[in-house]
Length: 314
Image: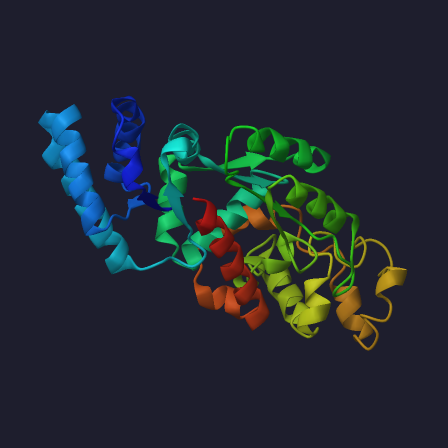
């Protein structure tokens, strides 16, 4: 986050401990300290009085942070936090507590998120993950809301928690129980991103799908999948397909209209789907933005929106 420290925090000697904690964050590159010329002069006088041996270092950190923030510009979704004297203790606690991304399954959804960060070249979020400044936590399906609320309780003023949920939609624009759960969490000050498509598996690039199971058979399934429209692909059961391979193809009654007109050989050939470990396989590939863009421009737009929401919290 970009942080502005109001000049009023550089008055009381009691503020020194929290200021030094924040300075360590700034020095490590965790947050950017953005200070104007007047504030830098106040900083110089304060540390010359209360910590003279490191006064020059503190001023240097303020100047470097300001230059770095100006040069880098505002990252999409990034906030600027202004800290006043009354907020100093609580804000220091919040800024030094890792931001939390709660997912339904830390292993599979975690692999999905990390793959997206790599493909979309989000170096800032990748560093936050590797440094422990952003943590991915396992929600465990029905427990996700409780895990999110537990993460929320770690923050005093500003909750830095985002919950990523499958929509469980069977049709475009369908409202599900997940959306009602998301609304309840938002009321508690938690940021929620409900995927537009059915599940995270529906965002799997084609070349990852083509490498699942027996490759010739998987590649043939991908060719059949691509014969469907983006909307049909977006709400297809990627893990299980149109029923098991040893039985007749099954289209759910709610999806009859959606898949009307899809040739029978396509529906039959997509029985069994692509398996339950699709997301974990993503990390076995070096993916690019193009891989996700090939699924549709709306997919890429949504993933960038998800990363912007994460950036706003980290």
